[in-house]
Image (cartoon, rainbow, N blue to C red; front, side, top):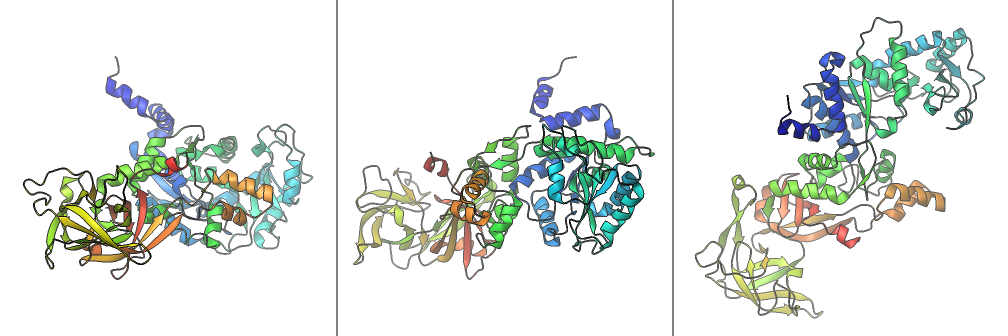
Length: 578
């Protein structure tokens, strides 16, 4: 029996993870179930890199009729906070996903403790009282075996007593750790007696002061997956070398127990890396705390809340992630590709409006004083169901300063003396001159209109080469417009940060200050928008005609309108940097 073309196309379109899931389902593994999880640590706000993992974890579950749970990896109380828990939930839902259940690694602290005790009793774990520096030195190198700790063969009873001491509050942080006893000569460095518990004398945001000894990520992660019934544990590529340890701990957990054979299988995929972007939560926290940006949701930040505030739609982020796909090798993706996906999406959903950012007064000298006409403006030419709205036209308008030039070159098709242009949705006008102040700056531009050229009128379709946007001076609203650009002026800020710190022996903050783009934010205070935007809501998607895509900022009020530039109409950055 031959496959149809549709079946062949479908197979080719599957990424390697989907192919593996389908193979598992075909073989009946895990009873034909698909269960994934998204396991963020609540120590910061999610960034665009997390969106790739979210789309995969939730997308795989949805595609194959499974469930994706949300599990907070809250094993380090020194950095975690409920503020981050709440923001993570909000970001996931904004992307259009809903978890099946909410779990916390702290839900399993007792089970993990009991498992650690079991390993001590079986001679598979021991308390080491050496410093972290000494333990690291004894691990050896990838080509040289490590050295056994002098505490490696401690009696079981002593290990149990000291393990209890780790959690009683008697022991100081760093004074002892619990290590798994595996193989100090193993070529995989993660097998060289890894630390599985450490002391943190800090109250936990959920468990309070109950625990002082906390499990390490490698010890908690796989077991948590197993406790929850995860079938497919999807991780980024740095966890490839952790996978044997992940599997070993689950083997030890199952050993000698009447547990079913279902077990999670870890599969790794490439991270989302973007040029002109720094995504380390540690570095993002420095930006916030040192005031280099205005909070986690600053529209220059790569956080999901930052992109949301800037005006990115969740659909545009999905579109971008679909474009770059999932592979088993890391690559540096172009930020312009993300912006391209945003433009594609917003072109279909953004309402077209008129706004003038750098205004100069235009007077139509032959237009009757006091006359006002309502012009029809289509809300979105890509969506006929979006309807239209009216914009008032009068004798005095605002136009962009750059749309007028007194002495223009030959191919300048905007407003210049003796040349005709169309005012969008209105009339054809011919420029007759301008008025300047003592400094030689243009204060007013003058033109005459053709009353028979109104858009939509019979005979109004004569062609002119330029079309300009405008707003009526008597009917527009003042606004503040924030023009956002890339935060970093270097293509690979992560590597550049390391290089600057090493060569100049400076802090991360000092290195960041060298790399920040000084033009990443320009605030224009004296802009004008059409009256239609008086009722616009925060995060509404807009296109300022001929300028770019914008949205209403959360700071905006009816008395003080504020708009953020999401992205320009065309990619100008790549041209500038070629």
